Length: 261
Length: 251
Image (cartoon, rainbow over all chains, first blue to last red):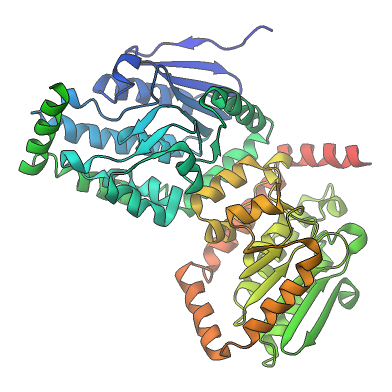
């Protein structure tokens, strides 16, 4: 079978995008850093999402990570001693989440390994989260003096009241638990079966009425407040304003030095 | 006409409205939806009624909108969706608890009727869900009720995935409040209805009014807009082509 897809290479090589109508596959391709969200990764994702938004024949976006993890969160190496960078990452994450949520296409996340902090936040903006049973999800950011509030607008919609203990506890939950609380819509029996599960879901979604899917998604976004910038702005500000505080600066430095020992 | 399409009985404070088109699996035609509306108004006006049970005669609770009856008439389809929107909100706003007794199937608009009730009792083998996007149709009318029932995240995945679920799975995801063996469906419904009649009617009405206010069930703007979105999408080329193909396939 001749594939109609092609490889799209963004300005920085952190993401690959393959268009194979009507499914677009976006892969985070920085496995050595567990696909951490750096400026380069944000640049690549923003470029990819903008390209997808302009692509008329697609109905489904598949978002995945290469290597051992989906996405381990922010690239903290860039943030230590540099609160302005941490603050910028938070604002970029908020912007990325809005863009993902507002894509006309249905977004399916394929999650294996770690999807932590900013990685978990991205999931909450997707329409479907499919997990390996041993995937790791959560917001363990209070230990570096950061508030995960930036994730709230989409996470609260995704899991309702379960967002409160998940955010406040810094607990890391596995894929099975994510499925139980409704964070994940599908859970593979084994990690090895995850790609096949996502193949099937994407193929199934591609068969739906594309106009009906897009209109349904737009209506769901309107109903759950995803089109409203105010909560995104407020929560991004709540998270960002802590970054230059003494607590965050010292806790992040201490966390980072303990990791390096 | 209305009397034959919907049966309406009251026994010991429990009103039962039964959709009565078993030969069409209680598919929601415009006359049936209007007859439901008439029956709900009768219940609302009767202060002796403490609980409403919504039921379907025959093998299925409700197979969804009877779109085949208005094929090639998108305007009539829109009218049906608007009427269904009015009936669902009138059920929701009754000052008494409501129970859907769901056997066989509750699909599309039928599932909408199920989740708008305060309680829904089904059985493991039932078929429930929203296959609208499979048909190129937008489930906008039922979306607000589903979000209130199971939360925005699960509703998003369910409505975008289309298809149907078993009663068992529907219960796990929160579509139904109870799931019992089919043979126990009637008895479980009666027992729940009887128990609910024993609550203070003023307290129940106040609780329900407050729940409706909190979750936006009284917001006509959203519900009117939902009906218009569904009507608009169903009149589009994609929906019309898919519906024609489905009906041609069924003969």
